[in-house]
Image (cartoon, rainbow, N blue to C red; front, side, top):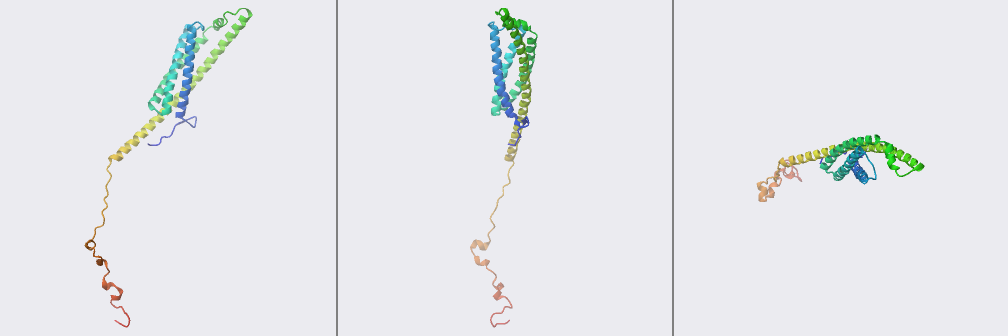
Length: 242
């Protein structure tokens, strides 16, 4: 198979590693925050926590969105671990839709929190405490509610940035998988072409034997007698002179 260079993010990290890390973090965050959201829904149902109608609707949607985030992150984890192209593509498009949903629902939830009267939430928190202790508890509850709202905004922004950056990494890895598949298909096509082209057959025949060689007459290879130096015309031996 032809070589396909691994794409990088943050200058040196392979995109496959980025998808793997994003899937793990998404799985942990999705399961954890989804479970927390459903727990708050349950607390509201039994009367321990009070949400108005808008907050409750937003909480339902957030719990659903984070639960789905955990599911699709598990798909991305399997796809990036075993290089299953179909699962990685599914994860890429699913996490994009899930991110857009989380941004929309998160904005609505934050808007509902900041438009809620914090004093009413503090009254619920300090219910049953009278006198000066009740006033102190009311103040702490109100300030705590304000801090929680700010922390929720920061948490949502961090999650949104994390997912938006992760989307680019995932689609970059999808592009790398496409290149690897095309290189593999090109290599298969070349292999089929080589197998389909007939190779020329070269037959090497031994040199043809002469009649003398076939009969075993080796004297035919002997030099001509009158070409020998002692028989040549003009030679002198002893006292013979020509």
